Amino acid sequence: MKPPPHQPVPPPGDGMPQGPGRRPLVGGLPWEQAAPPPSSSRPQPARQPATVGRKHWLSNYLGDEDVAAVLEWRANAWARAKAWVRESPALAVSLAAHLVVLLALALFIVRAERDKTISLDMTFTPATEVEAPQPGEDLAPVTLEEAKPEEVKTEQPAVEDPAPEPEPPPPAAVADAPGAEPVEAASQATAITTLLDGRNEGSQAKLVKAFGGSDATQASVARALGWLARHQDKKTGLWSIQGPYLDGGSQENQLAATAMALLAFQGAGHTTTAGQYRTAVKKGWKGLLAKQQPDGQFDVEPMPSHHSLYSHAQATIAICELYGMTKDAAYLEPAQRALAFATRAQGPNGGWRYEPGKPGDMSVTGWYIMAFKSAEMAGIEFPTATLEGIGRFLDTVAVDDGKRFGYRLEAVTDSGDDDDREALNRQAGPVTAAVTAEGLLARQYLGCPRRDPRLIGGVELLLEANRIDFAGQKDVYAWYYITQVVHHLGGEPWDRWNSVMRDAVPEAQVQRGREAGSWDPALDKWGPWGGRLYMTCFCTFMLEVYYRHLPLHADAQ
Image (cartoon, rainbow, N blue to C red; front, top):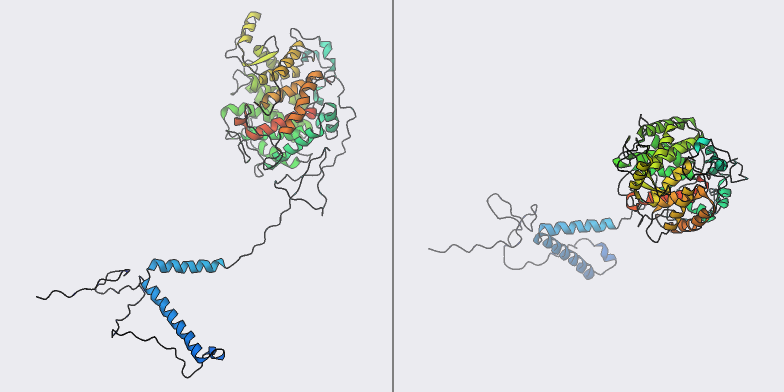
């Protein structure tokens, strides 16, 4: 029996096996037909180009032999290309085809005209007014988008005498405490309703000069407000603790961020109707008032629960200031409702803490003291018992004969006995620079005479232990309160503190780059939580101290 004839092995790359009813695949391409086998084993000569009977157009330029050679080369090249396609895998052919298409597309250039933008180069000068550029004036480009200024004209006359006229307060306003001066010594106290007058455009320059500020402090405030304006959410009008700037805080609190930003603008005289940034202020208040609840509380979620009353106090200060500065009736009712909520939230010991009605601590209570005193500055009425409760609270947390203050008491049970009160005072703590300065400021606003030994002794302790130093451990929260206390006290302690503050704070401000105008929160005691916006607002508050609130005593300078 003969062995079966030898079966040829399919050539490599044959796409699919041969079978009945199956068309062979050549070169991996299903649409190609297999070439018929040659009828003879002899090689077939290449097909000569057909040139008989007509001339090729190349004959006009080349001889007949050269034309034949060109045509033969073209025919052979086409044959080689077809053979390569038949012998190549489908994937290689597909990749080659796509490569050709991509190369062809790369040759096309689509020209699009870029949008024309105008860049403004803003520089801050010692003057208090910022003029907008004139039409047609060349503008140098800058890397940062600065807030667009609005030119504001005013007929407000300049203040001839930066020190307000003294007006004696009612006797009940002076604290009756051991070591306090007689009531007559408070005759130089400034009327509370005039404390916001220094923010007027005609007053700032004279007050800066009178109380030891400088062109550098004013320029620094202007840069800070520009940074704040750039980071306002243009849709909601609110600000954020967490960004979109670098080094945001760890927890979002748009209520506190917006209140602090508005306080910074208003501290420099910008309101909803006046000032370079009146548009930003108006948007901020539109967004914030939309978040005020029917019971009067400001509430912007998300927000940590223990920030709620802190933030409401800050917003209450701001709305009372706004009404006091504008006398716009549209802001009176929101201010009254905010104060009513604050009154209901006061704790049994006269202070405030994280939840309404709970025994208070010095840190939260400090903000509510300023809320109610801002209401007084604006001429808004509220129950006088509120301030009386604050006075009692201060007595429970005062230590070291009233020169310092502790944060809070774990339990408040005052029997009225002096020995019990002393025991409670020893328990108040922790005692820090920030809460001590808050307590002393509260005493000042409640009528403590300027030469009260508790006040003078407390200020000396603060100045001995604290110095503004941005190269070391920072605590702008404490520096902010110390700045206010010493400004109201005046005299040599103010000169000593201000001589450092007026230079150190502007020098620490970021001068270039994306965050120009802000302050870096790194190494600050509360920087990780408050972030760059918190740091910037508190530094701005310090530099606005010369006119933000007039001194409580007209003889403070």
